[in-house]
Image 1: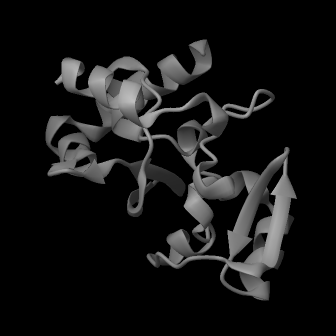
Image 2: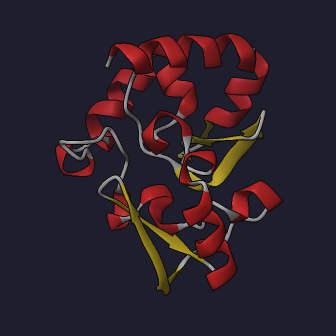
Length: 146
């Protein structure tokens, strides 16, 4: 499995997606590929609208409506994805930066975790099967070291 993520990270990660001042996945020029990070907390995956954009720590976020934009501005740290919005499973396995599918996510203890899901590989399933809590602790350690 480690080889798979090494290969995936080589093919799926590009340096233009890593902000030099931040370690943030900004595929499609927005965090979470332009999906509304506040909506995830309500178990919804909705694309944000260009009318509702916020910049936090040099990263742009899009929101579905004005209410979600206002909610984000009150406490952005509550809503930003863990591990800069990179695949939580890959970060937990070996510290790899792997892009995500914004429709594949988990809310755990109020935090947003995003996952890769393409070409028959759904890392949210692996995250759950292999022990999410252990992988989360490992991902936290790798993330702090980066």
